[in-house]
Amino acid sequence: MLQKQSPQAYEKALCYVQDKILAKEYRLGDRLPSVEELSNTLSVHPNSVREALRTMQMLGVIDGSHGKECYISGNFEKNLITSLSMMFILQNLDYSQVSQLRVCLELKACELACAYRSDSHLKELHSIIRELRSSQDEEYNAMLDAKFHYTIALISQNKLIIDILQALSSITHTFIYDMRGYILSRGKYKKQLQLSHEQIVQGIEQRNFPMAEQALKEHFRIIDEEIFQLPHK
Image (cartoon, rainbow, N blue to C red; front, side, top):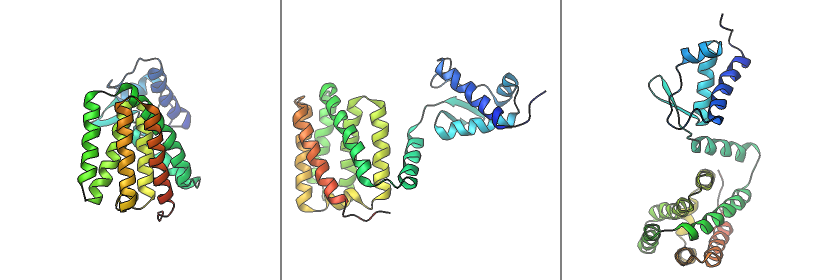
């Protein structure tokens, strides 16, 4: 006889899938058994299985968009953004703490980019730099600035760095009004940031991390100095 729905049954279904993933029996793209199959295998109520699946979908472990079928997706970025946003609010974090973590990660991404960059990567970075230099559209420039930093993260080939930086960037954008557009619109700082962008690319191109590191630190010095004057949501 099936057990009644309970926290224990719900956890049993969660642990079952977790253990399968840890044992590498479930991999990205694999289809999970149906609710009925899991219910029979675990001897738990189907509602407990459904609740466990909903939780895993919210966490980004599975994707239930294929009708009634669920697949292992490993799409954690959205959940990471939500979790860090809640931390920002509930634990009263300020921008300086977000910035400190972001600087550490971007410096490591920059170091890895110096090692792993290819000609196509350099072409992409130079293209962004040229557009930033010529564009007068503040909103578009803000998008280009975000693209510049994301491209460096991609070149690092470190999935954790990429996802966490994306989450931190989203949090900063969410809680601080028009951050990039405001700073990039100011002539003095626009020139300084443009120069730091160019020096970062030059360092990556020459595989000279000290050069790129110095330019990236200067970039964040300008950003941090200005951001503390911006209104927070």
